[in-house]
Image (cartoon, rainbow, N blue to C red; front, side, top):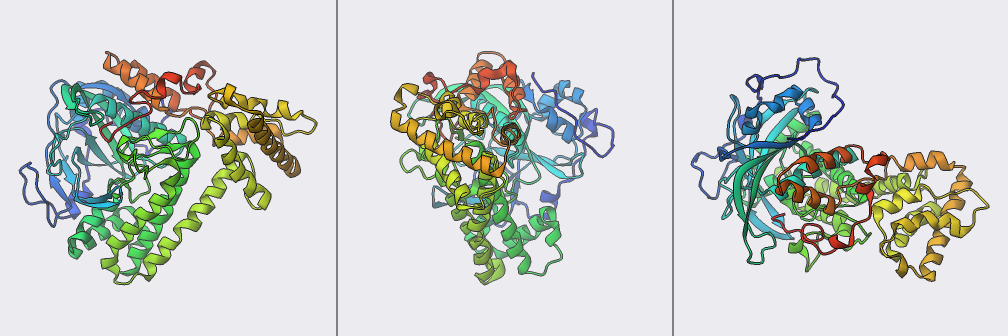
Length: 546
């Protein structure tokens, strides 16, 4: 079992929970919302209910493979509690604690642009809600703990490779400063699960695992869509009022229907911010269906995600999306807007007129553009994009990234080292960027000239603004990470864990804890993607089973 040496969270002063028997639950979701009256765990259409109660499937031999020390601390657990064998049993779904109320959400969604009807938590089971050390409710949810009424033809289980990816990415994104759900633990089940990784007719047994995900809420756009699609306005209103009271409590005193419009407006803004942060660090979600969109603006459901290595706005990691590339890197802002429109349609029955919803939706583009401009200015070390010159630099840097196969993460870190002072030879000034090229032999004189022209303009602008190189580099390195969870790094950790040990998971987690620091002893984690990873499954290709 591996963990991490995290700094403690500033808490409420309450003593840490030293025994699992001390854990207390305050299950607002299941207390306030209508439940499925059928308590037998069989696949079915669930009508008029927000959730179904269902017990996790016990794991044969649960073993804690990794945990997030930050989340252990946030939830108020004593760090030694993870060594209790019951910890692995609880967070594999084999043991339930007093006060837990395990359940699966009912929701629908648009998948790849088409209405898919009822979906629901097919392999996720929420155990219940705790109050963390900061006084905020946190839902503990197991992913891969067995079938639910929403599993359709699936088994509700998860394999080690997908669970490692989810665990690591949840925590890596948090340390990058990207809004995200979190992960408490990764537990091996001791069982094997049959999966056809690429849906190509070659199923094989793989080690099973369960991730405990943590978030203030796991409500998605699809939770509202399912009731609107069925004309169930009563349940739709009950859900909306609960969500506002639980997570948007400052709107509680607002009269209906205005509070639903204000709620939607806040979702619009938090979604714009989330997607902007994805672009900042080079993250591609891979499957932005409406059932994978959080009403809190959190990144949720880490499946066929990926990080941009060479900058390519048309890249998607999802094999299911290979033909149409709906969810490629560069379309994520537009897809988020489309998804918000579906949420607006779902909320419309509560309001009865479209004007307010349309106004909020129309605010998405200016909100995103404002956040994008501020983000790009920070990445460039500029105070803002207030002039035509600054805006041209922001678009020009992305054009330079596309000239040749250039690593996005390395490029931005090297850009911070470019000298802006006068009297520097142009070839010398642009030299640091060479480290970001995947195939330097393919860099032509034309590429060098275009890059040099941009860099000279960038340096001139920095001089005009009086921005010192050292201060600029420090500021840029606070927003341009050196370390991201590159697909091949996650795959290496998966390979190591599959072959018998979780040590590599812990080491990678530890690197990702300080993504903006130099970490001189860990330079290999910041290296360009190796050639062998260009086409290897798990590095360049991922399915929804990944």
